[in-house]
Image: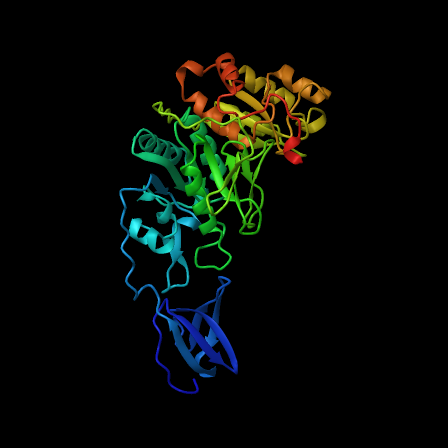
Length: 429
């Protein structure tokens, strides 16, 4: 280092002059005494050799040394119950490490997202915090029971759940069955990029989620960026949407349907569909159960038929992601039909969904589809594979719906708009 300077503290926003250049960012702790670490506005961390630094200036003190404004509920605004369950949106920058850690209470949540408290009195609750890939059906059950209590609280206007993106559509599908007919909005939201990054999608997603939670649309909905810009969000049907990109801010897309609505930051809501449940005063009957003896199986060239026997021995139900209109190999060495027929005869329940995601399965177009139907495979129209998996596990947890005939009847019942009896492809326009 060329001359002494006052050492900043972790979390301080600083300007560093190094080799006649200026670098700006949040000061982080470094385990290397010769390196100064900064978190840049784009979210990346850089290391600077201290011996090359000529000047460092603290532009703004970090929140670790600033008094966080007191979060007070007004008692006059509508009440939203907000459940933090994990994911990027439920975390904040840890200035000591440069990484993120989970938000733990209302005060911390307010310090990161104060805007949402301008719209409502928000009761922030953190029942648990998990990465979405670690979510289990038991977590869906726990969330459903908590949300059910909120929905039946006359003081609560709506519910928001923060969640990691990777399996968010599984949880949304589970809630659409476990909560039954809703009386108020249930919103699941997310963030692809952490709140400390200039490109974070978290604030717009949260503000739009709050507007939808106060709306008259009593549905399980996923709210997030509609485009890669910060212009507006979509409210998507929870059991007919899917994460379709690994990192884009508008990663979630509606599948085989249109969004329920567009939402803007200023509170403007433009309904796109009219087939939604209206807010009402009926009691929500929570039916939070799940039989984990169900599985997903993706058809691919070279499927070994022995895997079907494994499913028969270890599971009650199987959802197949078939190729095309709902096919698996039906000829030659890898013909799966004999094993599927044997498994079905011995009690395995097998259902067909499209691995193309868009479109519907149909057993009547090709001979392979007819062979599978004759073997006992049930075709589920345009139901998403993940939604079918969740629905089957939920149905099999009810004794009265078990058995090939009863389960089939229930799987083909359109319980929560999870499939379209007819597709007109207008959603692609």
